[in-house]
Amino acid sequence: MRIICCGNPERGDDGAGALVAARLRELGVEAETRTGEALELLEAWRGADSVTVVDAVETGAPAGTVWLWDGWQASFPLRSLTSTHGLGLAEAFTLARVLGRLPGRLRVYGIEGRRFEPGTEASPQVKLAVEKVARQLAAAAVSPTS
Image (cartoon, rainbow, N blue to C red; front, side, top):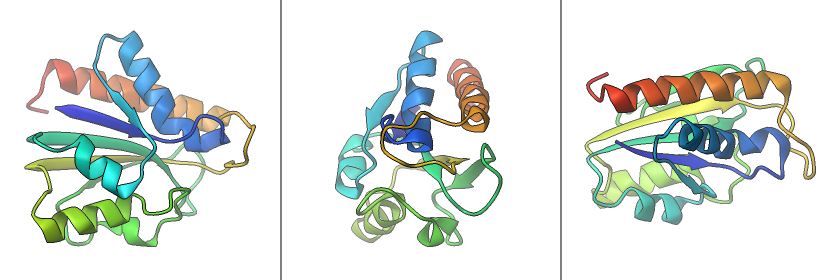
């Protein structure tokens, strides 16, 4: 399983993915940190059969809410999400689908954020969600069939 964590730790809750990657590395699990730009993501998952992407999202749910989506589902809701990336996750999945470059298994963890201002740190709710997601991913890395 390739784990790709997106975000900018200099923009508050947008750093959720980068925080998950750092925590995973502390737990001995390999994780990549990316900005979340669409073309960068397509390259990052090239050749991988199973990919998990982690990023901050803003859907209107309470801060710290953890979402888990199947990237192959036609009803994948990221098209309506606010993104701090120019062309982000939704566009990456759409483009990969059109180009036939989706990995065999694609899961997305979205961590609901609220504060995205430059120079702020992640909110306490997001920090709790980061720990939850990191532990779930670490457990899945040990038992890849989950």
